[in-house]
Image (cartoon, rainbow, N blue to C red):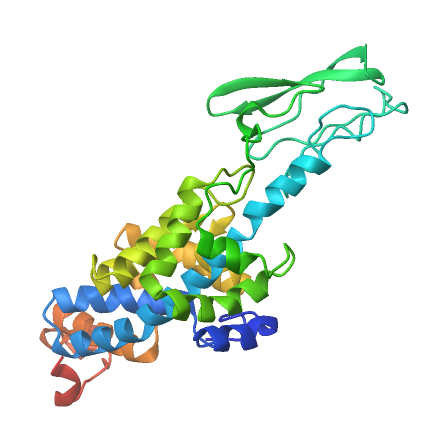
Length: 340
């Protein structure tokens, strides 16, 4: 694979410390996994050996990777309390500016608010901002009273001065149910120290054991309060799947089959460390794989996996029954290659 695949260059040291091969392409690994799995189903002994070796290589790396990024995400549980404090503006209006990375804004409502200059930013997943907001004189002069977001559940309006009804800060703070082991660990890191948390996973998992460490993360994502694009059910699923494999509740093959399509709040689970091209091709290949388009997967597979697949293709088509006058000289295989 080209240098457009694998771990981002600036994260090679962190990846190696966690136990990840920086040159590993997730697209190629996924293609090999599904091609070899199909070949095993067709009775290939050679593919079975290749698949076993691939699974033994990938599964431990992915456990470490997923544990590390879950721990990195957990640092946001304290940042939510900070965001909630910062969102109270000088005019007393609780606006959307500081709520999350996917923030909404009406340009800080202050005495300079001008309805002719106002432009709202759509909420996450909303198609558009209401082009005709209603204005009123309120806490700081002329203000937009509401704008509409069009979401799956229908039109929802948020009034100036209101916070998102789903983002009401819980009494006691967002992190009140955080397991003490995570509370102790995260106290050593700042919100900006994502890679520090990733690398810290190694010591955290050694101290508590991999299964218990992953269960702490699962409990943190399910029991704490989460808002915006942080934590929550998507990350809880990542932690649960990884924990269940580490605890021998699901097989290695089932674990890998699930990992390829895991998503966090901002996309495929691999996009925290892997290059954009690798993650983009992974998504495209997964869609084709869901339609059993194995020929497409061969475009990304390793040489060894493609070689076994070509033997299968050769045997199924039975080229030897056709005349070379029509088909030309066909690829021939040695007896060793055909012993698949």
